[in-house]
Length: 170
Image (cartoon, rainbow, N blue to C red):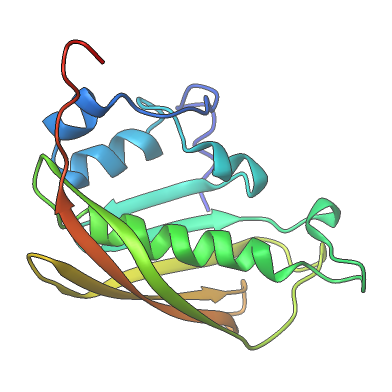
């Protein structure tokens, strides 16, 4: 992974105003987050993603599991993988949407293949859209380690909908 941290501003976390979201294509929106031109979703503070890329229908997120992600039995909590998989799949769906359109996860299923630890090093999460329709989209994602071994995988179904701009009154 290239160290592009010097090229990007420090991460800022927050929620993008609805007026801005509705004015951008999904691909531009996701790329804006990854370039740190827009705030990153607050949930991503827990996984500290880096070297993220977005193409139409494909999102890649790199992260490093650490001790702070451990569960009581001494391995990385499944919630760490869930955040990465759900985010990669959802953002991959977002990259296919026109301006004024959003999505929400209706369901997702995760399968854990290998455990992670703080010794796992950089992991790669790749989300890919399987089908993007007018009302429903499906996607899949995989987490792999630096040796290309599968750690976890998931599928999702998302509801696609129009986003209404907020009125001037709020």
